[in-house]
Length: 87
Image (tube, rainbow, N blue to C red; front, side, top):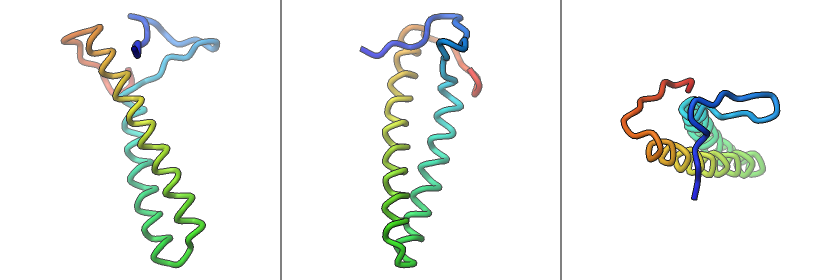
């Protein structure tokens, strides 16, 4: 079972807590950019660059899945609470 960060916990140097909504926005941006660059690279016959961009797009998808699982765990633990982009 995936747990969210503890309530009212603040990240420290030794134990950082992630800003999930901001991380979600950045992962979506990375996915879109890498997918577009992969298409352009394959169209320009730069297969090696297309593969690198496609692998990075897959990494962004995996990150999105992890983020969504953690956000769902946070919603189960704190029903009805709305979080800002940087929380």
